Structure formats: structure tokens, C-alpha cells
Length: 289
Picture 1 (spheres, helix red, strand yellow):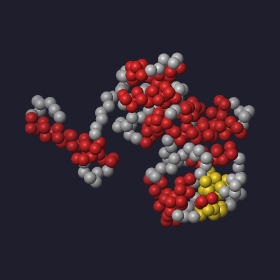
Picture 2 (cartoon, one colour; picture 1 turned 30 degrees about the vertical axis):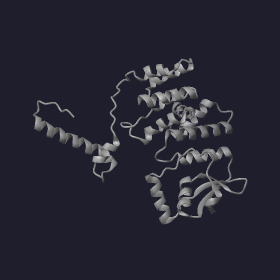
Picture 3 (cartoon, rainbow, N blue to C red; picture 1 turned 120 degrees about the horizontal axis):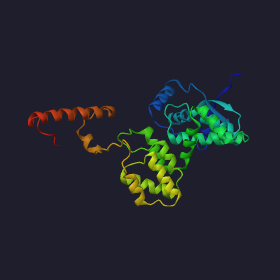
Picture 4 (cartoon, one colour; picture 1 turned 60 degrees about the vertical axis):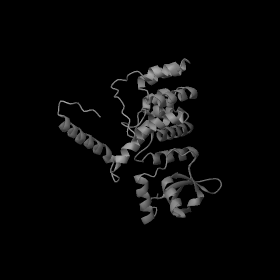
């Protein structure tokens, strides 16, 4: 049976409480905005009615925001009559279709859906719920548990995990999922101590190092000196990090160069400069910059 689509006032629709997915002004957002400006909202949003007579958004937060920005007063909606738990599951499932999802978004979304499933099916074991959720979202049971653990991280450490998606790992400080999970078992104070060491050393711990840090934290033996000794250990296959002053480099770059072309430009410039010096000094001289 085809569900009815109704036009609702955008101002009568509120966002889903604790909505775990961020709305970023990325390329997909701009493409959606241009489509809505040109043709209107083609895919109806999904909402449910609240007790006060207004509505709660389940799927369509980006479409709603664009309508608000563009002064579009009405938006097509499908109104669902569902429970709180069913609403959470629908909201999570519809948003997991996005192209890029941050670890922090998965962490909160998986936790919300897991708790909803737990409430709806109390007789099903927690292990089986992990498996069911994993099958539905395409993750292993262990991976589901890892993501849910991220909810125990302080925001600063969680941001380092998100940066594995948001930033280039070769030039930015990031932290993998597995070491982050180990750190999630630390107290808030110990996590803050670890983050201070990360920023001071400009390093993040490996999985093995994070496990040692967790063990020491559980024994109450963690302090700055111990953390420093752990962080300064050479990691397997650890490459030496190079850092550059971005402002100085950008001053000498062509003004219209695209970010993705900067690395190739710099490499070619260095190669050219190296050849010039080699010709001037002779091949027997070492390059000394």
C-alpha cells in the first residue's frame, strides 16, 4: 500500500532528539541544495507526529535545513505512526546510507539502535543483538562493540578518530579505532592526561601501546612520566614525521593552485631545484638546504 505524502510547514518539524549525524556543507550538500532550488524537494521526508501536534524529523534533516535556508515554507512528508524505539531504528537506518559517516556518528547511531533493539526484544541475548545489528549495517559483531565503546571517549580523543576520515593521515594527527577503544576504558581524568601527552609529543599510541596504557590506568599507575616513556618508544614501521609551516609554503605557491595539486607541485619544484644545484656544484656535492 502506497503511503500518503502530505505538505507540512517546515517550522512545525523539529529535529530528532540527539540526532547523531552531522549536517556538513560538503559537495553532496551543495548538490542537494542546487537540486532543491531548481526542482523542489523530490524525495519526501519521513516524520512522526508529536503529542503537541507538531512533528519530529526521522529522515530528511538536510532537506529540512536547506528549505529553512532558502525560505521554502512547506516540505513533502510521509507521516509515520510508530513507537520511540521504531523511530530510532528508522532514523538510524535511513541515515546510514550516506557516503561518508564519521566514527563518532556510527558510535552514537549504533548505540541508539542497539538500545532500541534491547528495549523491543528483551528476551534476545545481548550477543545475538550485536550479531543482528552487525548483519543489518554490514559490520562484524566485534566491530559493532568497538564503535559503541567510542561513546566513552572524551571529545578530544574522539575527534582524533574522526580525523581518520576527515583529514589526510600523512599530514594530520589521527588515531585508529582499536587504540581508541582501549583508551575508552580509562577514567575521564586519565583520558585527559593521555590527550595532553598526545598534543605534547605530537604522537598517538599504537594498539599495543594503548593496551599498556589501559592496563596501567586500571591499576591506578598512570602518570605523565610513564606516558612519556610509552609514547617515545619506536612503533613498528613508524616513519619519522615531517612538519612544515603551511603559511610560509602558501605564500610562495601560485594563488590559483588547487589543494589536491599542492603535493605534486612541491615535489616537482624540489626535483627541479635539486637538479639546478647539482649542475651548479657538480654531482659529487651533497644537496645542502
